Structures are given as C-alpha cells and as structure tokens.
Length: 481
Length: 86
Image (cartoon, one colour):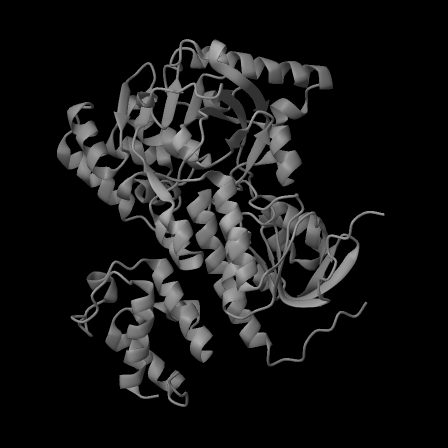
C-alpha cells in the first residue's frame, strides 16, 4: 500500500499553504509565528520550489537559482527566518559581461556602475545620476504605460551598449524584457544596485534545510508528496483543500502554486466573477529556461577571475527575441567555486538561457533527446572560450529544458519567473472573490526572484492573519462533507 | 493604554525591527522614514506586530497614518484606549 504522507495530519487548520517555494514557506513560517495553526503542502519530495538543487553520483551538487539576489535578503532572512540564515549570505563580487560591444567586470552596485557609465561608456555624469534617481524613485503606483525600452530611450537614446549593460542581468534575474513596464525594471534594478549581488554560503540545500527546521520550530505541519487536487470553496468562501484524496478543512488557504493553475485548475472558474476570470485568462506567463549543469573533476579548480556570474553573448545587439530563440547566442554562466559549499573540492558551472516552452513541447521524443544533447554540446563549446580545456576537465554534464521545469514545479508552460506584470493585480484580487483564499508567488516581476517571493509571502501572511482575526468572530465553517 | 504607553510600545516594536538604529534621538514630528532606514516591509512588520500583541487591525489604506511618531500615536489612541500594555 502507498505510504500515507498525511499520516497524523489534523482535520482542520487556520491556514493551509499550497506549495513550498520561498513565498509559501515564508508565509507559512510568518503565520505560524503569529500563533496560527498552519499546514504546508508540497507536491514534490523536497521543499524549496524553484529554490532548489539536485545531486548526481560522484558527489556533485547543482544549484538551480542560487546566484544571486539583492542585499535585502539579509534583512528579510533575519526578520522572517533566523540569524543563522541571514549570517550565511555573502556577496558575489565579480560580475562579468562579455559581448561584441564590451567586456568588463563589476561589483554591480550603483557606485561602480556610475563609474563605468561615465568612464567606459562616456556618458555625462548628470544623465547617469538622473537615471539612477529615476529608477530608485519608481514605485508601484506610478504610471505603468512607460516600457523599459522607452525608459532607456529617454535617458540614453540610441545607446544599445548601455541598454545591454543595464538590462541583461535583470533579464537573467527575472525574465523581464524591454517591452515590460519600466517601473518593474526600476524597482528590481534599484534593489540590486543598492549593494550588489549576494548568494547563500552552503548552497541551496543548506538554506532549505535550515528553513525546514525553522518551520518545524515555528510549529508548521510540513508535508511533502502532497499534491493538492482541489481548493474547496463554498458560497464564495474557502473551506479547505482536497489533497492525496483527503479533505482537510481550513479557514484560509494560501496558494504558492502558479497563479493560473490556482484559479483555473485548483479552484475552478465557476467560483469567480466573469470579469475576474477574463482578467486572469489575460495574464501572460513569463518565459521558461534551459540550463546546462557542468561539474568539474574533484580538485580541478577554476580561476576565480572568470567571475561569479558571466553574462556572455555573441549577438551583436540585445534583443528579447534573440534571448528566447532556440538558436542560442546569450548564456549566463554561474560559476560555483568550492567556497560555495565550504569544505567541498568541487567547482561547478551552470549555464542559463531563457527559452520558450512551445519550442520544446512540440518536439518528438527522439528530437527532444537529440536537442537536449545538442544543448549540452554547444554550451560546452561556447564555454571553451572562457575555460579552454573544459572538455578534459568535465566530470558530468546534463541539461534541463522548459519541459524539465514543468515536470518538477507543475508550473504552466514551465514558467520559471511566474507571470508578467498584470499577474500581480489578479493575485491581489483573489481574496475579494473568494473569502480566505490568497495567492503568493512569482507575479509581476516585482514579487519575483528570491527576495520578491519571500517578501510577497510576508505581505500575504499579513493579509491572512488579518482575515483570520476578523473572521474568528463568525461561526466557524465546518467541513460539510 | 494612553498616548505615552502607545509611544513606548511603538519604540519597543521599532527596536525589534531596526536593532542597529539608535532610537533615543527620534523626533516625534518628523517622518520615521527620514530618521531611520525603514522600507515598506518594515511598516508592514509594525502592523503585524501590533496585531499580534494587541489584535489591533490597521487596514492598508491607513498605513500612511504611521508616518511620524505623533501621527502614529494619534491614530492608535482611540483604537488602543481600552487595551492593557503587555
């Protein structure tokens, strides 16, 4: 008989959190700390969502999304998790760019970018200062009609090289494009520019393990391999979930699943207003990704002048279409030196490119496997430009595609950065449609990435806590099954 | 709880939120954001902490009331007058 992953679970909770991405885990932890009873359900066999890693024989551990996040993570981790977690966050100091327009290394903060833009790109200081101030002054409620491309044209007209410097890293971080609203770019860019790029010492596995322990300490009932089939709604109020064939009651539910899966697959559109359903349907998903994971032989060191992150491209200009094309010209390499996991003798390289789900989903099984092999081979060839003897030094190499991302996260179309900007308004409006139902997850770029997801989890936890207090005075909704 | 105790409570919460800041010279009529390194998440934390300790509900539209110490205390006084300080 199959193992019961819900053994010992209660029949009812104050809140059920679906999905253990950083937003889901942080919402669960925050709610449990305020005294609510919380059940955290994860469909996969490990916690973390896209903040994940995998192991391969020979002792290789690959991180999927560890490099890197803004300095704000230190404060959020200390506040919403623990000092131990916050204290393990360290800066990545060598951020490199190499493309037909320029090659440079930077600490990726405002001071160094200002220097580069004035000295190397020969821009007037006043323009640079004005751009940084404009980006930093942006907030959420501002005009959404200006696009990132228009913002750049305003400050640096005709400077394709400057656009590339300012845009490439943010595209890597959250999938944003020149066609997205300028405010979403400005907020994320300013977050990074405040002090640079950071990572977690010890690897994603250590981070998630520490968070798991913290969740347990806070009193969260954590369950893996629990796939929620249905969010149960009665009379426009959430009343629980159906998971692994069992109904569990809850006064509130937070979904950290993909926004559209939450609305259309787990709840069902019959529980929402027509207008809301239309808005939700119109939400565009962000693109997916391909990654190639390469492990060097034990003890085979990489020269750290390679950088921590290398944005490399052979494309003459920065174009969104070229970034998504199967004909890959742009790759971002994360170099994981042994210091990533102190005590390790392993250097690893992860190459990331943005990709379209459709391009991979339409392939036959044979073509898919061949394309995946080709992705690995062409990536190793491209990397040889920076690590000449890479082929001889490799111990392991494999690839993931949008199909892989979909398989592990169940995100529609393997979306690796949630939804486009409009997803945020839909995510925030869910509780107005179904009382007690909330969504926290990568939406609208601002709430994406490790820091955005974590903070969105807190914002939603605050909403849930408020709802639980308000609704506590009403008679409890019994599960009427 | 009177205005003086409410102020004490807010200072206590701020101490937890900004442990590295010196709160002794805080001016009551100047926006907190101009005196301390506070962002929107910090204000959310103040809201959550008040709810946790005193079950005081501050709707999102009222977050602006938390701009200065004086405005915060004025806003909270009617909401917290019947509560005991913990």
